[in-house]
Length: 81
Image 1 (cartoon, rainbow, N blue to C red):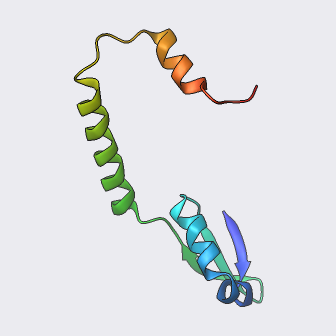
Image 2 (cartoon, one colour):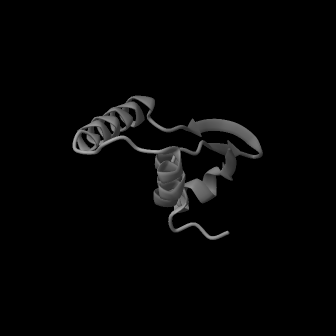
């Protein structure tokens, strides 16, 4: 959770909304005291998760069994160690 003074919030609102859209909470303060909280829209995020799960199920219909090793390899693909 990040705290931002109201003067900075006015100047950087678009960036703060990007942070909230990414799942973070932002607290807006005035003279060091919290006055507002920007939080992600839970309903919108839930709808996105439901859509992704449905897409994954549809994609999995054409695949055979998947091993744990394959799942781990997919997870780690592109990661730097």
